[in-house]
Length: 220
Image 1 (cartoon, helix red, strand yellow):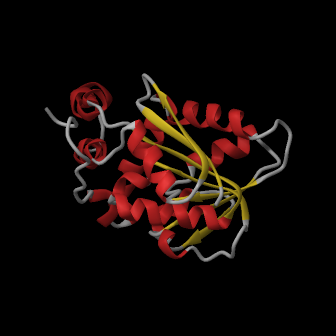
Image 2: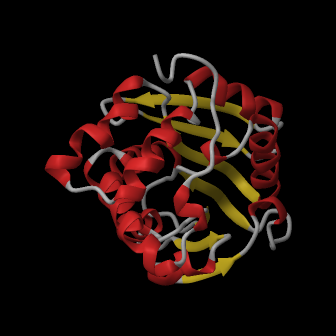
């Protein structure tokens, strides 16, 4: 059965498309986050991490359309969010500060942001690259690293394809959705990668039925 073995990383179409062709699938990702657990997982992760009313800064890596950063601004008006994505066109709809840049060579000095955050980003990379990314995040973060990603499980693997007749997902979303889940993590896998990256006090929570994993860790 799919998703029962090790992580399998295959190319995703969205990473190769020009802005016009990518727009529909990016909108699908926002819809998935809003209705199927991305935003709710983020809200709980932040509630457990950030004191109410405090001003803080966040670097959102792989931000794409910036919908997660928009949620942070809505819930925490004093927060300053900077969106970073390797594909400049993906940032067209992102509000606020935005930077086109490489997550492996972050264009920021040590301890620039209170938190470095990413959502549905790490699963694109092999384990050794994930360790490198988390180490980079820890170097740029003053307080901590926050990650939300998919849980590798058969239910989310089949969900997009099965629900397409009802929900009308873009073909790119259908193609990439199953691939993303095959490349996703199990709880202990993500926790082990955070430890390899040298992050302090890492913890990973599983959120269902969202089938999301949320990592919190102190910066290195």
